[in-house]
Image 1 (cartoon, rainbow, N blue to C red):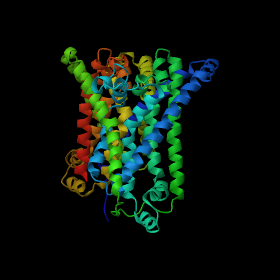
Image 2 (tube, rainbow, N blue to C red):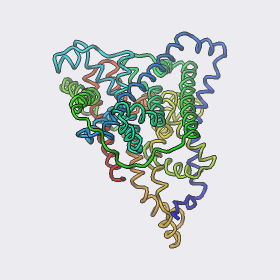
Image 3 (tube, rainbow, N blue to C red):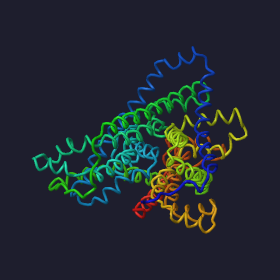
Length: 521
């Protein structure tokens, strides 16, 4: 019998204290947002929430989210099918190209697309062509789709690799073509994967601020930022965003539970299917893939490099270095704090107790809550309880940890069930105490998972805009804030050095995570 890794060496206290801290870091900002909103009179709150402008903002937000989910899944599903079920040449290159947009922050994507059009845009300067300027709903939907479709791609690709090919082969033997097999056999089996991707993308769009602000498209998040100085109205908007977040989480959990109860079979054996021969379709498919890569990777990178060259004469290396230092001062301690919390919380989550489930739900909620709503809660909390912490990095570190804990927990949750008790028991038999076992046995075994979690968290923190914008000290101006601020004023050349630095850091972090994933397998 294979014995699994035990939780007992840690004891109760080292597990429960971080668990309670996680619950508190999520419950406190949500509670203070609700408290601040409750201070508005019922009449004022009702009149403000039921006005036509609020309904318009809600409609814009939902319409944008639905459009991005549909468009991103429409791109990702056939792309995942091509790299897993066909004889497409260069499938490894296609997979890499499909993941690369993850290295481009959403607001950098929006900055590049917006600066490409118009008579003075990068398109005119680079190609002599005047592209239409992208803004509003179309610009926001395009930028968010290009940034988010890799999440769907990774989800669908993993599902295809686990899918039993027997049914598809039987359908083809009965005369069904590739398109019919895709629609009638594969698509119905992908509802769980589609729900998982839709939840991630939908929550991202719901809380997005950088893209919609640059594209000048009014959503609940942008209205919350505009209402920042009017705390009562801002708190009401934040509660609406939190309510939508909880609704999405509960809806996804309910649908998943219903499908699990009604399921009669799993995904099947993971054997290599016979690839579908594309034949002459290789050429048009590669043309479409090249167009996607041109739009999602080459255009934002090339546009940013163009504006960097345009502003080279006014480039201030000192200001860029200061912004990078501000980013690292915020990101490195926050990453360490997040990983330090993630280890005991992931460990506790394996126990399946009621407290473990509460802590896990709190971590999920902290990641799902839109950054602006979370930031508002921490601001209200700081002003009412510990005003001295308001303009410090400590508040920003705590907010980052509350928001990105799930990212750090992901690799740990996948690795912990694989650890054996044998080395732990051997260390205890030699007289090592709980801390000695943790330090000498457990942590070395989890080194890869901890490094992957730290890389994912660091990348997310460096790209995060709303928390940095609203919680960083006044004398701090991280890379994300600098890039967004210049782009928001249409100072595209000034924004380029900061955007390009973010692209470089993000690309390096994504490459590191992919390398860790290959080494783990």
